[in-house]
Length: 433
Image 1 (cartoon, rainbow, N blue to C red):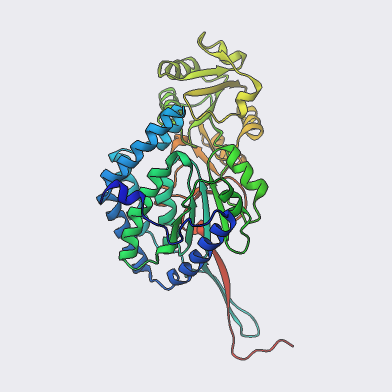
Image 2 (cartoon, one colour):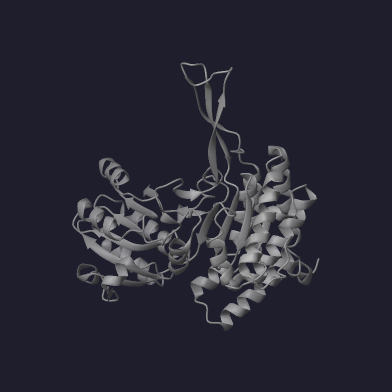
């Protein structure tokens, strides 16, 4: 199969109309019909189909990487930042990891049909709450082509159909990945319209998806602050939001210096462009090795911006502005503050965290437990790098995103987060008096 064949693979609903609302409606209706067919597939059938999709992805690796090279070249020509190019770039290892993640999702327990709770009423009615798919899920995302595969795999495994609208930066990569996956899925009996990619980059399609109440059951935005803000402001469809990753690491006075330095370096510099990257480092005023930690970050190529006490640790530290404490850099830039103890650290996190992931490095178990209890973020860590904030690392296979709200699902959203439930009532002829 050539890259041209992959890129020209048609969606079940062709882009034959200039009306974005009509296009979304047609694709949504096709997706909803496919979801009803998908609901009849067994656990084994869905798992087999996903393994076929992973195999097809591996077989099409040369063509997918060629398509990705086109996107990278266009991104460089258009001045994308190194962080965005890193999110966009695929290589053999990353593509193998995407295929492996699909296989992992195939091996996860099917949540559909799980009985959450049962009870029997005094009148003999037997009640049960059972997990079911949400229905048709719309995913609006930007430069990460792996979202195409992750979203398709997670939605299908949980019995949902999915309508994907990727960013223009990854248009060739997204089309190639989806075409390869669909070839495997359909060969295994999955209806083609169960996974669809909007075949146009017209931004009006996003607005049509956001207002498709009754057609799309849930929208998941994956992208920067402006995208998420627009989705939340304009949506007439329920939204599972993933906001900024303004992640903190607080190094307590009792922290082991070697551990603190290793975790700070990993949390910031392993991959700077991911949402779990540390953006603010809080150093306890009594921690004895703050200078060593900051020097290691600077020596590692990180630009550091700090408050007055942080600046006193190293002359290379620039002054931090008020905006720095609320900025998701997604780059080798870090804000650093020196704080007087746990309470001040907790206050800073409460004021500036985006409720994504916050971590503490400490040898004091009581301090660790307070931090776990009092930091109100989706993920709270002790003595671990914030870069573990990932569905795969949590044993969830892949993730659709990390939800930072408080309703329905929170943290890495995988299979369970893509289900709802219904009540089943079994009677023996009871009539209500």
